[in-house]
Image (cartoon, rainbow, N blue to C red; front, side):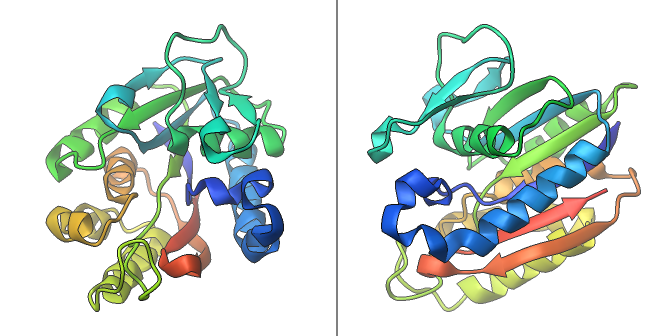
Length: 235
């Protein structure tokens, strides 16, 4: 059963070594992420799953100890999913940033695994996956890594789309209220058009949390660089 969840953005820029001179621009986002992870720690879960988007060759399960690297972003930073033997595959970027957050906050509370999912995964399959993950008596916590629209301004990666702000506002409201029905109802087609990198993960969370009675709190909602970043805590 799901006992707590945290939702965080997944840009490599969240890691100060990647952001370099621009690191301070995401200080508030980092602080909110640390606070959200602290709520996960307080829940005393039996296991933690880090969920994030992955390309086709990076999907699937990642056992404890799997390593992820940010060398592709110009820095010699390597992190892992807690203790365990490194697997053959490395973590995708979203899970690597999640593993970095856990290492940065000194996570020692429960075994950590990762789940990489396609950003195009259909809502129904997201819901089914979430329910499957939360099934059983174990106390489960989720760290869901994903961004909102990348079309919030003319300088955004996806340029500007006038629909992006409304989509992100609806997503942020649902995350802050732990509204599983609203998350499940997010339009997957529009999310793809708006280059949303968190929709599938949020809908996995919605499936896992349905009926769990968790309360939500929105800790951060901003669009630096024209990309929607949200931090939310459910407990």
